Image (cartoon, rainbow over all chains, first blue to last red; front, top):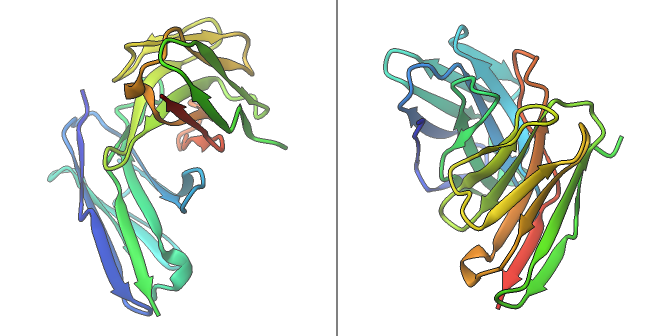
Length: 112
Length: 114
């Protein structure tokens, strides 16, 4: 089955700096890669996603890049703000009934 | 629209007790999922239902059973709770007919087994 590894496990950044979270996946059949943000005590919420036929996608201050050959994808947050502090999860799906395999999560702390 | 509704939000059980976690979605999604979230381990799939009338095991199904009652509802049952089942449980749904089928999660159930 699919295995997703996520790094780093914690990330501290100064407000205004950029944050990058990286994930690798094992199943070359995976074709859908969403990212979720989970604030403390809340549910995970989808923030951006990408399919395998697209190399990069951007939405305001967040962007995701995908390297199918290397089987890794990354989340980039620019001009970080305190409200970006949360746990971020990457996920991958080989398309089998929509099952998602999640990474272990990255705790992002943005300090003013 | 309510999205995905889970009940209860909190529950404390004694070892050996049973309970059912309820989940309902109003988005006409075909697929539904139950995940558990433990510190440092991300979200792990317990069971899923690709469509009404079907269910299948995920990564950590032992100790659980599910029922897809209809298209809207997907329940998770613990027959004999164990302390190892202390966790936060999330139900999710998705429309896998779409190209980008990111899940919508419920608000979670925090379960403690003592």
